[in-house]
Amino acid sequence: AQLVESGGGLVQPGESLTLSCTASKFFLRYYAIGWFRQAPGKEREGVLCISSSEEISVYSDFAQGRFSISRDHSRNSVVLQISSAEPDDTGVYYCATGWGLSCPRAGVLDIEYTEWGQGTQVTVSS
Image (cartoon, rainbow, N blue to C red; front, side):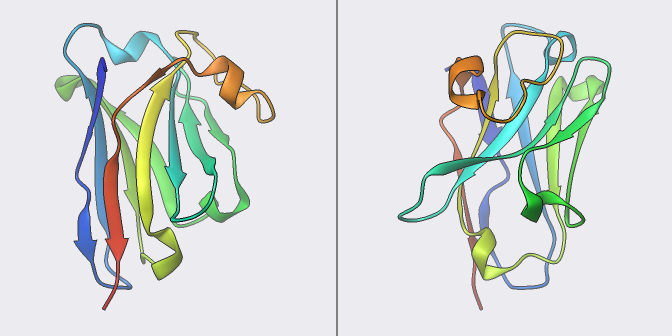
């Protein structure tokens, strides 16, 4: 995979977590990058996306408020921050791109996102 996620781990409820998506073979700044998660026993769902012009798309209601996405050009990364983590945030988090400038709209995510990272596990538990 050309995308690599990092930053996952075990956190306690209420703590914050920062996940990073990086690439070694291309510059992320030129493409829309989305974050997804797959909870145990559930389908993968979209979280947030940031376009090349840094417009943000929210893919799921749960992502409103506690989740944020941003770019760190100095590290060629896209960061997903989770604040006040909850047990339901547990899952594997993936970043992906469809190689476009704009964020794909909800409803066509599985078609539009074609390059995926291997994922990073997040476990929220006391």
